[in-house]
Image 1 (cartoon, protein in one colour):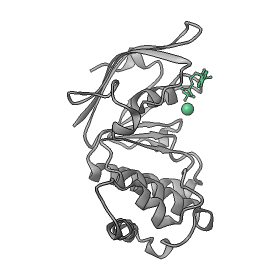
Image 2 (image 1 turned 90 degrees about the vertical axis):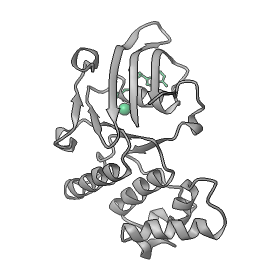
Image 3 (image 1 turned 60 degrees about the vertical axis):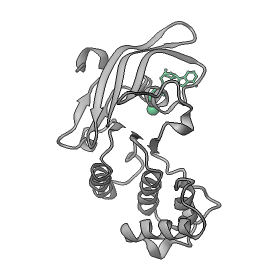
Image 4 (image 1 turned 90 degrees about the horizontal axis):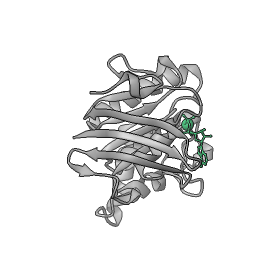
Length: 216
Ligand code: ADP
Ligand code: MG
């Protein structure tokens, strides 16, 4: 499974160009890191892939997952998982319910709780199953968030500055764990970061301006 971006050009509603002719491919198990100054269009690029582009923008070009064109598919059917710097766990659901929420609809009834609990056991947090997000630490929430993302069985992962709210020590630990989980999920991943330290050693990095630096 590979993600392809072909000839992506994005315009703002005032006619200005955000970026032009971006080409890239990301293979399964690969993390491509995307860097660039604030406002250059990093989050907008992720919005295009996920299908959440604001009406302030238009784009040309294509987004494909192997032969499947994502452009024409509704956001909720694209199987794109997103991780933000804020965990976005539902405050009114406890931890196992937050995880169960992400499970595919094909998982029914008591199976949903069971699979959520199993996922928590795998990250050694099953003691937090009945806690609410505000009752657990930032690092624990971060791990639950990534786990929730992966439980939905995405075919692509997008990470938008996923480590920037974590303190230094936690950050290094969580980072390594995230890349391990992504490798295991064996899906293409695109990560926005402003910190070179966040980039795994084997990662291709796109530096702004992207169009002149990376085409393959
Ligand atoms: P980055 O993530 O690289 O910091 P963004 O992709 O969020 O940048 O934004 C790209 C540009 O588009 C910025 O100039 C930003 O101000 C503008 N922008 C972002 N979202 C909107 C929106 N909903 N409406 C209008 N302009 C936007
Ligand atoms: Mg951004």
